[in-house]
Amino acid sequence: MSSEHNKIYIVQPGGRLQGEIRVPGDKSISHRSIMLGSLAEGTTEVSGFLEGEDALATLASFRAMGVQIDGPEDGKVTVHGVGMHGLKAPEKELYVGNSGTSIRLLSGLLAGQNFESTLTGDDSLSKRPMRRVTDPLALMGAEIDSNDGKPPLKIKAGNKLKGITYTLPMASAQVKSCLLLAGMYAEGKTTITEPAPTRDHTERMLTGMGYSVDVQDDTVSIEGGGKLTATNIDVPADISSATFFMVGAAISEGSDITLKHVGINRTRIGIINILKLMGADITLSNESVTGGEPVADIRVRYAPLSGIKIPEEQVPLAIDEFPALFVAAACAEGQTVLTGAEELRVKESDRIQAMADGLEILGVDAQATADGIIINGGSIGSGEVNSLGDHRIAMSFAMASLQAGGTIVINDCANVATSFPNFVELATKAGLNIDEIDG
Ligand code: S3P
Image (cartoon, rainbow, N blue to C red; front, side):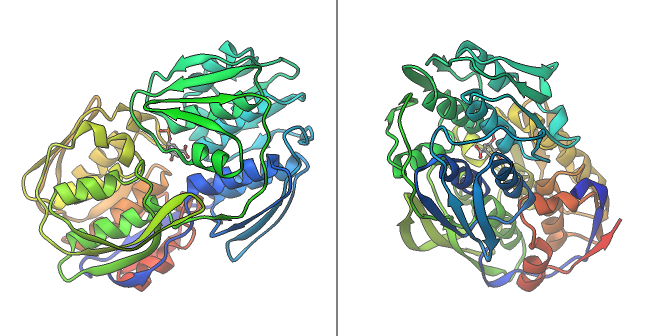
């Protein structure tokens, strides 16, 4: 896996981003297309599937549970659904690598099966909190052993689940989705209230496959015992991957880039809203809806940015975009203040600390706080930073080089392949001066 062969990025300063590119498929939707396609009756044809390690880990898990899945080839995957009760016991542990989405969503789905299973992951995943899923699943009647609240998760068989009414303690689409998947196997109704809106791809795909979910304001309910009908899924380009190019163009004079067919689901567009508040020049065109998800081409032209106080209601809508936004803040005039984002501390790395440390090495005044960061915009210098094996930290520092005073060396970049396997190629095509070497 990626952690065994390290990669180092060496990025030269200057440059600008231009042209039209299509970034890989949405990671969240790719995961869900395999999960729900596997449980559906009939054959689901997926196009635009993300061939990154995280989504492939989900795909491998379902193959290990007896689902025939053809591909991926050029983003096309065919999932031969086995129905709600057609999964088979895996012969060994299900290893999901770096993927929080795989482990948390699968824990809910597996809690409803009549076979035992164990979910494991890489070093980073093995340090991430799982009580947020095991606690509510226990309330539903599941029995899951963990390593003091961390993976591996051992899910016992044969416990009949019952629906619960639950308020999420944190804004988390993974926890919400986990409980919706478990709810399909529970007796009665499962009702989940979220403290703030989070991505709703699970709800949309369930609805698209004929499983009714009731959404009322901040509350979503599902009845157990339904079924899914296969459908075709066109996965839009991932706005979280597009983000690096949006920020890169926003900070480098002369940039003008268009990102094609990007998912602009209202629960994912915090990056657009926040960059616009900072003064970015962003326009959308070719808006349409595909497979229940809105998409558009996003054009970003350079414009000077200003520091802002980031509105807290935007935080869950941009939760994966903060490493890149911190680079935008480092290039903006004035101070940017982020609060209410303590969830960033339990992502693939502690993203607040990782970015504060790296920015400081590059000469930026960035102070980590318990639930956010304070960044005083100025110039970015040069130096050697560590991504801590976090794909989004690696790609964010790569874009920082567009405004840097000298070369930026970024260590531990192999995990970029979890979400954006052709990042170096596309970034080079767009105008970034980036080399990748084995580390
Ligand atoms: C995801 C939800 C978010 C996000 C992650 C993908 C999903 O995690 O950070 O990259 O696909 O549901 P949380 O639920 O932990 O916020």
